[in-house]
Image (tube, rainbow, N blue to C red):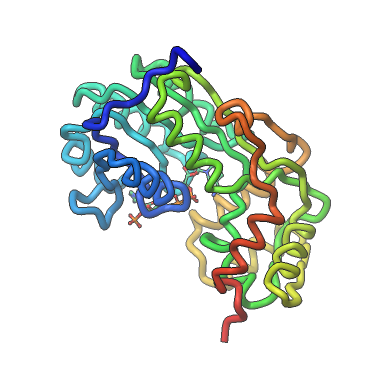
Length: 282
Ligand SMILES: NC(=O)c1ccc[n+]([C@@H]2O[C@H](COP(=O)([O-])OP(=O)(O)OC[C@H]3O[C@@H](n4cnc5c(N)ncnc54)[C@H](OP(=O)(O)O)[C@@H]3O)[C@@H](O)[C@H]2O)c1
């Protein structure tokens, strides 16, 4: 700690996914510290679009560091090439440090990590479990509000991690040299089944929220009936058949990076419920 060097106040940091679950928290913290932030999303002043590589150079001009979140997911085909092309461009543009948001138990995500590690840039990998915020800021919000969460899992456990913890680690990596060259695996402090997580959400929100476990084939058919795009159904199928499951275990990334315990799911649920976002949908 005593040898750590802190990022200079004129360091410009590009946050890719600046309106996303972790990106918006990273932006808020960096701006609070008075660091110049370049917002990176399709709706930013200089739009950044993963599907349009011509937008990448403008977003990188004058940037010293990058917090990189890929969308929709590092698991999807093409993500590794996109990260490689982006990283090369970043290096040529004079970027010094890149912090990559990655996912656990995911082969393509690990390939993307290796691209960043081999890039010659200062790097930190923030490899995360399933975000707690998927339930109040992400794909499962509508089902929670409607009162029934249906998933193709039953006994599967996951150490849900809070996006506040992820942002704290990312900001530490962007502002303090001692995190350079570190791969942090971030999880919450305990394993929960999805049924238990939904029960905690119901208790915090003060309402009954049912959990329905269904076979994966039925789940895919339900998503198709909802009219969800094929790519999204592929991603959820991949998540529930390949990524989550027996390999779930706790990791010590939050403790190692920040010297404190990760936030518990009960605290997450209480805070999320207090915003009123889990009130029943009409
Ligand atoms: N969610 C999880 O549980 C989880 C767990 C581990 C790892 N991860 C990793 O986290 C990353 C982000 O996942 P997330 O689900 O939490 O999403 P998120 O960060 O909440 O994603 C939304 C962000 O992506 C931007 N975006 C959407 N489409 C874009 C495009 N075509 N080009 C550029 N930006 C675009 C959005 O901004 P605009 O709409 O304004 O463009 C917004 O800032 C993924 O790489 C995933 O592998 C997620």
